[in-house]
Structures are given as C-alpha cells and as structure tokens.
Length: 393
Image (tube, rainbow, N blue to C red):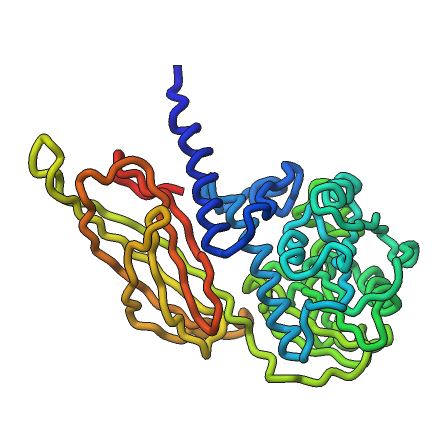
C-alpha cells in the first residue's frame, strides 16, 4: 500500500505556505484564499504548466495581487486612485483572481464585475458579495448599470478578434464617465508565437488556453500599441498611453482616457517585486545521541524589481513566523533584453549560510521577502523538510 504521508504533507504544507503569504502580505484573516476548481487561470487547469505541484494556488494569488500593484501604480501616475467615491467595473473577472484583491481597496458597493461564464458569474456574486453581470460575446447586448470612473480589463483584449476588439472598446466607452479611465492589457506583436499580422499591426489566432470558450470569439490576440491607440481614438477616447510588458512581464498595459490625460508624475514600470529560493544544501550533524550540536544550512536565490531604476533595497528570510536572516545582495545590476522581446529589471542574487540548532526539526515554512520603492512583498514561500534535508514546494 502506498505511503499516504507525502500527499498529506503536501496539502498541509501548501496551506502553511499560503497562510504565511497572507500574513506577511498584511491581508485580513477573512481574505479569500480558495480557488474554484474550474478556474482556468489556476496553473494546470486549462493547459500544462511549468509551475511545480503544490505551488499553483500561490502563483494564482500572487499574479492577482500583481495586477492590483500595476493598476494602482498606473492610476497614481495620472493622479487617480481606487479611493471613494470612484465607481469601478472589472470586466472579464473570471472566478475572481483579481476581484479579491480589488476588494481590499474598493468597497463591495462601489465594485461591479462582469463575466461570460455562468458558473463564474454565480461564484463571484456569492463568494465576494458583489454585483456580477453576465457578459456577452457582443458587448452591445450588455446593459451597464450606470457609468464608471474606472474600468479594469486585465486580460480580455488579449483574446479578441479585431471586430470584437473594436466593439468592446466602443461599448466600454459608453460605460465610462466623462472623465473616466479604462485600463486594459494586450499581447504585443513581439511575442515569438505571434502569427503574421493583418498589415495594420493586428494578429489573431483562433485558439487559447480556455477549455470552454469558442476559439473564434476567444482566441489569442497580438496587437501593436499604436494600433490599439488608433482603434481607441476611433471609438471615442481622447487619450491613450501605454507601457510594454508591464503586466506579468508579458502583457502591454494601456491607460485610456475619456478626456485628455494629465500626468501627475512620469508613468514608469511598477516596482513589481519577484524572487526565488533557488536551492539548498545541508551539512553537519548532531554531535551526540542526545541531539546536541548544530547542522549547517546553505541557501541561495535571487530577487528582482521590474522597474530597472529601482534596486531591491532589502531581502529577508523568515522561518515559520520568526525572522531568520537578512540577506546580503550580490552584484545587483540592471538587465535589459533586446528587441523584439523588450524587458528590463533590476536583479540581484543572494546566498546565506546558517547554523541550525539540532533540536530544530520537522517541516518548516521558509519565506523570502523583498522590499523596494515602498513595496514589501512575499516573493517565494517554500517548505524546509529538516527530516529529509531538502527544500520542497
């Protein structure tokens, strides 16, 4: 009979890792950590994933939080925020990957969501207690409940054929307040899987990671920023700004104004923090049968800030709830990838050597925290198995 302990350990470890992430991110005890099993944004549900088993939910939660960080950073650049009395519409909310984070800034009465999958509509309305509209392939059929100061569309325009892309721009212009902003994201034509465009900077492939939506209506779109701007102005928007690869280092982000935009400060890449505990090694052993003595632990990894002008100021490790080490950052440097895949970041490596008391045993949660530009983020959480002397998760 197979040993059930590893599977049970894995479930318990994931819960502990996610609890550590929630606590160190300062999220309330009631923050929704559950993910609907049909949510195709959860790595591995709709397509194979390189995310190691047991890390899928943490990746899901972190990418949702990154969307909020990018959104708030963009709004601040144009003198806006999510604060009251702004009324917010989230389009293509799915099962609430971003919604749960928006609700940390926006009261439920000010937030309306919209989604085309009926089960997701019901889940969001029930789980998060907000109004969730049933979307349509043709957005002209949607009746918006009033007009909104901000419309957030984090990953819909990256899947629309040209005519639907234009229809959605026009429909959202009608739902936007006179001085409102729409923020949306797209895939750029620089992506290596992009098919040839139509001669105007727009390419569409009728297939996507979705298992439920018609590929002809929801495929994969690659569009040049200038073409997005042209279509937006044709739909009645007054101003368009963008940053390439601003969301998840993958999608271009657009701020589109119903009225001319006035920058409160230059819009630069958001100081999104990332990092990893890349590996471990152990040495030493208790010096006697009673367990006296120490063991040695070596760890190494990396941290980054996606604003190439912002160095990571500090990185620390926590073991369970106890600060374990402040890390010395090695060779911090700017990295720039050349076109056609533009990307830039400020990255540093770290290594640490710690003596572990011999009576420290069991499975422990090891958390990597990075800080830069006023941001403090949990960038990796692993399980340190002191019985098998290995790093897991």
